Image 1 (tube, helix red, strand yellow):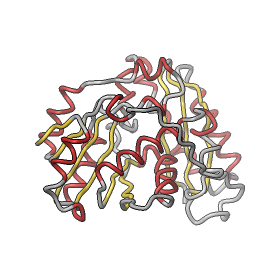
Image 2 (image 1 turned 45 degrees about the vertical axis):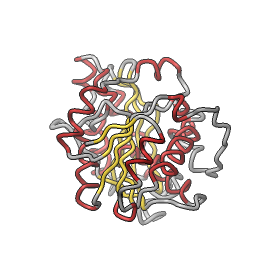
Image 3 (image 1 turned 135 degrees about the horizontal axis):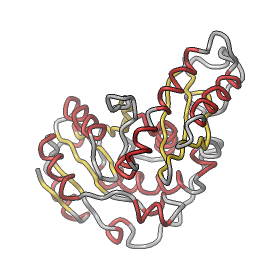
Length: 278
């Protein structure tokens, strides 16, 4: 495994590989089994796998959240070598942003709801860094975890405006044994909030079971109340949406693909999760 920190070093490595068989896994580090499942999938489908580790400042609308975001570079390199990554790109902020990125992306309504509504500027920052990484790596395929469900829609929309864009490969959520979606932020949970957090997924699963007797709006209320019944959890939103447009559905027949998406505060930690309804 080769670890590089500059664009020039990355280019030197990539000049020797077949980009038509190149897979890419962008991450913000503090890697867990969910990230490693993306590397595994990339290795199955590609000859060479590049993993980036970069905590992108432009997608944080809360400076304290950026400061507290977990970082463990040493462990990330150990687990990536074991996972079989070929190249790890670990730039610093100056390398990624030698000048301020003033680009503003237009995603229509995609970034006006859920994560976009509650984290202003977040998805514009995601698009800035992912477009930069795609331009540097120029992979054939890029692998993203479905825990960040809305983000995948944003990245796909961004790719429509790029000259060279990879195939976006969504990969299933990896969960702990108790159902909690794996996330780097889980490391920030107190023991009490970690014990409470699986109630998010339990409530969403219970909501899926109510489809036959409740409208989407009623299921949203049911799931929200169920999560909030745990005093250690506070729902930021739970929305049932069209899986492509991210717009709320009023009827189960409004879309052929319907997803329930949640953001929940567990103490000082913001967790997201989602579940398929249709």
